[in-house]
Image (cartoon, rainbow over the protein chains, first blue to last red):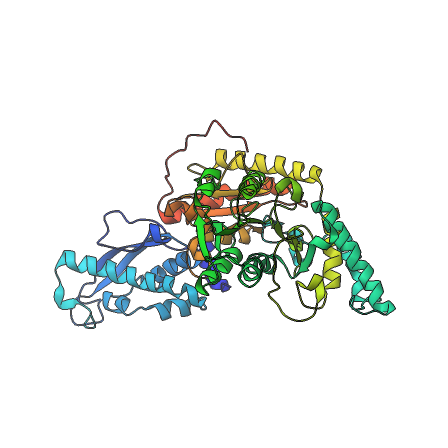
Length: 143
Length: 411
């Protein structure tokens, strides 16, 4: 039912836990519904010289998750933290459920919502960071 | 068992392995004795002997006449035949009543009973009352008596629940119905789905006062795809599958003779010593789990419980995750969690008990059987606390409150 990669991430999840004083937090789902995921991010401003763009860019310097849910929910949480770490916020916002599922070697159709939850949690954490830091100009144009 | 040899199976409520003696008894019917029991020649008659013997074995077990036993493809068919069969017969014969027939069942029945009842409602053949249960999963006699109406024709209550193992007061319900029937114009027929009970409980139909009883061979070390329905003489049942006049014209279809012989053999091998041994192991397991794992809970009834069943909740650790993590440790259990079901709904049984969602989503069912060894339970007790602890850490509820131990433990 699950791919080897899913089982591996489920048994040995990366970036599990909480970040003390996170820059952004995103929670999706609800324990009452059977699954809940929280992502914590720490954002770093790269100095202009080191950033690839013209302006100083913001990257996800650290990311951690807490997840109550099935094996797929835990595996997708772990996977999205691995995928998002070190990315700029713009790059991170482009991660979607298909990308997470693909990286996990596929998910059973009924578990695709877990993968969606992971992507949503990341978006929420970034939004939370941006709202706190009032940088509306940097919002994802698609939103 | 090949690859499964080193695995620990704690899901006997789902299915059981075929006992080697049962398998031996079945073999000739896939070889020399392959005949069709309906044929008059010697090939057929040899197979017919196997059929008759199995029927006698089952009748002996239930304390009934052989002709009151109908072989089917399993409990789903038996339950369909019992419930639809009675209603259809009442609807189109001398049994016909003025108003729409009324059926009473419980909210924690197996889906094959619930869906059969829903079907009868949707097709306009019957009205149905789905009786709630108390927080232990028990049907309360007074509550049942209250919903019986003038047009009630059938009560269908399972003997023991497949998820939480709660044993219903079938004898008392039987007595109540018998008493009521003495002064009723419309007789009430009483059906029980005894699938989980065969291995562990008294199934004499006269003690239970049931008119219909369903069972399935693969739950008691017989083969899959074969079951039986007990139908008390005089109970109105119309066949629901058309074709030949097999099984006293109540169940058309060529006999699954190998399976039927296996069912007959398996039922003769049931014994109460095995049940006692399993109960001891189960009690030890429950006691240890509740002691070793903080904030853990046993769902269902402690007293009125099938000997081999345990059903726990571990808030903070999701059920499907527990099951998958145990599977990686080569231990097989099952879960009532929504994430493990095909429709992402939590178990209707746990919901009917009034469990909080965080309890039903974190439940696992552990069911023992006659091949369960003490070392296997010890291994389970070694692995489970680590699994729950790890998952609670992942969910951020790792530092769960230290649990007070219940002092009244005693399944």
